[in-house]
Image 1 (cartoon, protein in one colour):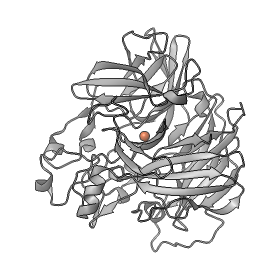
Image 2 (cartoon, protein in one colour):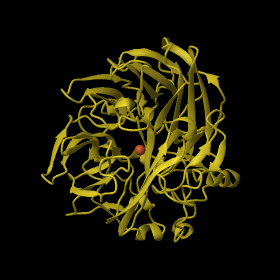
Image 3 (cartoon, rainbow, N blue to C red):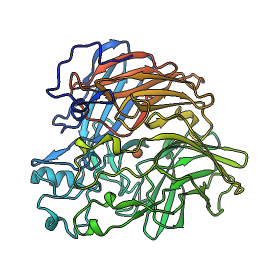
Image 4 (cartoon, rainbow, N blue to C red):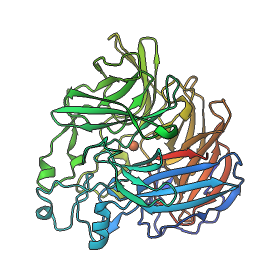
Amino acid sequence: MSFANDRPSTFPSASVEVHGGFDRDDWASGYFNVEQELNDVALRPLRGKLPAELCGSLYRNGPARFERGGQSLHHPFDGDGMITALHFSKGEVLLSNRFVRTEGWLEEEEAGRYLYRGVFGTQKPGGVFANIFDVRFKNIANTHVVRLGDQLLALWEAAGPHALDPVSLETHGLSSLNGVLKPGEAFSAHPRFDPGHHGEPCMVTFGVKTGPTSKIRLMEFATQGPDAGRLISDRSDSFSGFAFLHDFAITPNWAVFLQNAIDFKPLPFLLGQKGAAQCLTSKPGARAKFWLIPRNSGAFAGQSPRILDAPDGFVFHHLNAWEEGDEVVVESIYYRDYPSIEPDQDFLSMDFDLIPEGQLTRCRINLLGKGIETKRFGDRCCEFAMVNPRRQGLSARYSWMAVAERETGYAPLQGIKKLDLINGDKCLWSAAPRGFVGEPFMVPRPGSDAEDDGWVLVQAWNGASCATELVILNADDLSEQAVLEMPTPIPYGLHASWVAAD
Ligand SMILES: [Fe+2]
């Protein structure tokens, strides 16, 4: 099932370091500055046939500038966001890509050098004295992109969303979402789309202000009809302790948050020695907590949040959550510790053996205080897992996720796994040894009720040809439906969303 093996290598590495079945140079070659912005340029079909029913737009956000003025980023997450749109219609796919014109991006384009520190450790040029006490940050709009009403929103969790034109990708600017958000208010990069099993479809999201206490604002927005984009629910709750909340999960009645057992010690950040995210450390002896906030549309509306112990470990992303009797069940990708890149390390030469691997874990949280049961789904390192979007907030049988090629330990993501969450059956598609993947996106077949009927859209970096490919897999067995080459190379991206054609 490899796509890279059966074609000539056009980019042989001068020195190949084989590590767990991949070439480090191939992996590193997927991080580069994007110099071209294209409008509606067709992808080149390499193999297979596009499914006629696949009509709509796949939007993906991700860092696309890794060097400026001769200075490389310390961490890829510090890179300025660029949106890639793939429009599927009439048997072809057209690509448009455009950087989000944030205020900081425009200033740095003009200056030709970095003017802001990055949260993940990138410093301004000039050493510690150029960085000390500079606590400004640049909204880099690089994490996710979603459609809300007639706007496309480029998201970055520490500040507000940028509104873009869904067709031209032109940046309209920071959006308050019709006055919902105050200037500078945090707005998560991980909204969840409730398909409306117990009410109207809506987008559920949050903002968090953290410190000795953490305040979560839970917001729900209409997504259908003329009301799309209107705030329909809003509540705020305060919790004791610092919280790093990148993601959450929803059920019909609850918004589920996990407070990782970590601490924030900002002194090295203030002194210009570290990025803010490098000041997060494990908190020995502390317990992680689940914070369950009742949704205003649910059976527990108006009640106080429930706070329950959670297993040890660190979580960026959740897969899904649902309710069963007195239990809320949440599936998450657990790391044994918070993975950070220290100031003296370069992310392109980091020792993969020192990075904890992500492992999908199910937690059954008893709401009556009878404890938590956990179950881990195998050892293989995984990230970016999703269920059929129609099963968001309900129990799901299947999940699709990006996985490492090796079966244990950390390694770059090179394959896609479909996992049966009930019986543990799995199937795999692999881009190894020279291909690398990001988040897979499962698009259900229109009109079909079968949970695994549809396609999995994968953006893959081909280290052999130094090109980015769109791989379309059949969601049921991960067989290759089509592979197309993008008209310009696109670096590894982060999160994507799908907007079906009208
Ligand atoms: Fe994320």
